[in-house]
Length: 329
Image (cartoon, rainbow, N blue to C red; front, side):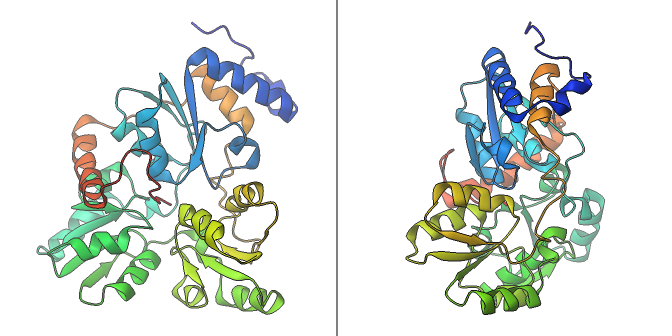
């Protein structure tokens, strides 16, 4: 039993200085034999205590190699579910139980079953930004970096692509030989980024390279120099000779880019690129999670087994080992 360092209900927790919270989180991490996994969109204060940062599926796989009893997943709910599906022997904690993904919430298993009944010959490709129940109803999963490869690999002419219409539209543009049936889901954060924002920003910074996430609107992607996932952005910046970049994704990504490349300039094209649920998790949330072992995320065995099949098909196709740079978000 870990001796409490601070009662989770103590109002002092939310008001402590960041350096104190950081020390408490790291002390609890050692006592719990915990591994802290943090998505690129999280607050900088949380990224700073991470054992690993990255994209959602790569992080879920990172937990496989973690020599830990407890995995604290600082992200949103579908990510913690995926971590559990791939790591059922570990305790998976989501520090903020209300940190959900609005896009994942735009499709449930019943809706997908109904769509499958409309197109009985179609394969179902589920973006990892989906619930475990949706993954369980799917043929195969994909991420933002391998979606084109996944769809192209299927023998089916028709593909139901869920839940992101923007990523699906991008895939359709790359794989015209397939008919993609798109679910009308979207990421509200990326959807708030409009073409007028990038036109204005590029006019203000004509020498900047524009790297966009494929969850952006198609008319925004039309202006991009590169379209890639968050992990792909890290690689793109490293390889590019440019000194200035416009980053078309959630603003948390700029924290890591600026930290890794202090000699480069990174520009957010609109202040609307902030995900409220990604920002729910704070250092105090991590302390609470490790103190109280809250909130434990599990998936029913039958759903987890079927969802894992869809994930495993993707991993077999891409040939990625557990710590590979797979882009999930």
